Length: 288
Image 1: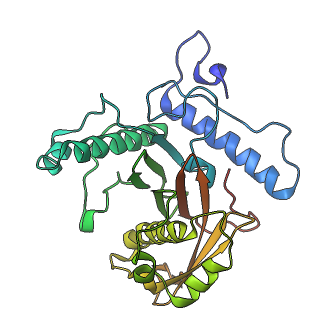
Image 2: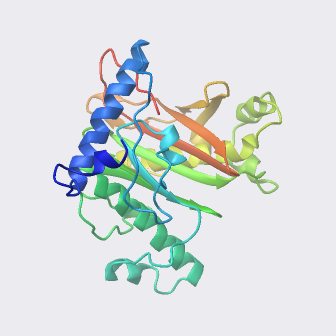
């Protein structure tokens, strides 16, 4: 969707909710046909009205994190801290005693979150830390935030389209000495050693476990030890599976025994994402 998709007849900008609905329709159409093998020749693309660091830019390509999320999720990212990222007074109070760098990343990731929520038709509002620091998202939405050296991102979706969401970003570097042994099981370390040396798989494993926790906690309100889930990677598909070794979250009458997710390494950043979607018979849930 290029410029024409942002403007209504008469040259007036379309409302954010209209643009978001148009994106959802196009993404769903494309994903459905990709799933059944009759994909359209061209993938739908769109451009943001905004050229600030949180936005995708003007090339029509999804953000890095959007590349591993289902099409019903919206995400914005930044590679540095925006000077004009503002906080609501309630948010500013949370980081009032923090160092300047922490205040900047806190503000940038929340602006990314508000940009994402705006595409869902949600007006700007404070996004405060809740229980154990997990962000409190507006009613009817789910989301996740992440920040690391050189990257900030936030993703959001409607709660009736995604049940739970977790994203994580890390620098594509080896973990500090001794950390892998603290966060992993012996069988996971054996698995990583079989994957080759083209990726820092230890850092990928750490990122997956962060995404697992961010998805797990809003569903359970329970802590999850790093070694309470066993992770395996499928390198060719850039996917992973996290099998729980403790009772999993319950959604309705069903217990979730594993999370499926996707990963990406690009521009020196490790990215992982989990999106727990409601059951949709006959439709395989795929990322962009």
